[in-house]
Image 1 (cartoon, rainbow, N blue to C red):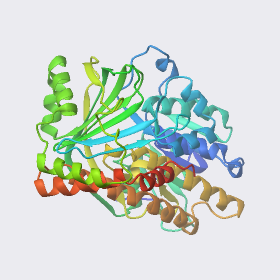
Image 2: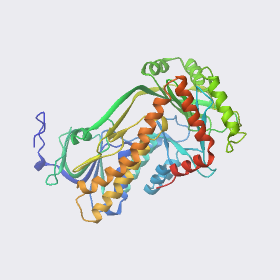
Image 3: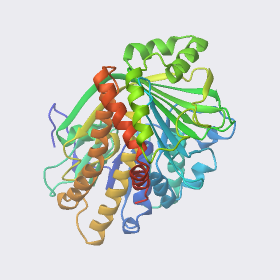
Image 4: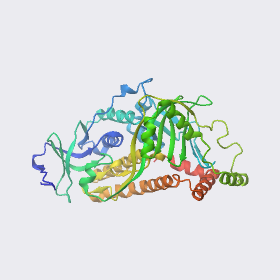
Length: 451
């Protein structure tokens, strides 16, 4: 068969056939491969994971080793998925920091919101990306129905219009592989999505995410709260990794991110602490109105607020050498996550702002939904590349993902301005929500519920 541009794939000479081929390893692709490996309905099927790189060794995550600067706030639902896959103990035995509370506040007002769980429950676990990747990769060795090719770079994909033909992948080394279902987990610039010809809405935020590893000190010697402050250039967050170390995520303009990366370490720490503690942008009349409203609120506790014990952000004392890096931020969503013989998951299907830390959690939700639907298709004797079954995945995943993505996009836009009217509106809204304890607790329980 001949593709646009003259590329020819000879399907008849395919070097191998697999029932499902996952293009892209990483946190989502590896989880998909583990899920299909553990799926009882797939034990007689052949699954192939194509990873362009090589998964990290878990030996680099032993106690005392430097932390990686890319971390993820892993939700309770995602932890539940890891437990079902049998990788949670592997992750947790290395290093995963439990977060009992999330505290969000504003640089322009005293509005704030706190999410807190019981002592035996978590808001999230902060885990290094590569630790998750490596743990999932090691688990793949337990599945006889899953093959893995590392260093496997895809040259081109062919996705047919109907079930009469297989999907076909040609690798840069010349190997040609046929499959009943091609699963794209190959990131924002997905070759699988491009080959599927689905419509894709995307735009850039004109922001970069600056990440780093910082040494901190707290008033009580504990580091169990994730902190996020909204500033006019974007949110800055400290995510606990140990009692003395946190991961930094600072969303700001591309120019500012570049400047911050190049600052001497001591100047960078000064500016980071200023972003966390400065009161220069506060609007007094907004704060006075918030204070008056709080006095009338029956749900508001007298001790709540950043002045209460344990509700002051950590003080950053240093930034670890060579840990600062940055990357562009944007939004993207495929209008459909599926076509015949193709399904998209993770960043190949959708991309969102990192301020709520939900991006990869949405990808793991994709994995869970698709795994269940593919299991149903196999049990019912259907072709797993059939649009009939894949449409169920698309519908469920879109309904789950889009409300989160749109809400985070709106939140980012609202908090990027210091216009007094908008500051007042957002301050009153955030404060009112935080003050309604029963409503907030209901939402927290709902968002943290295991599926």
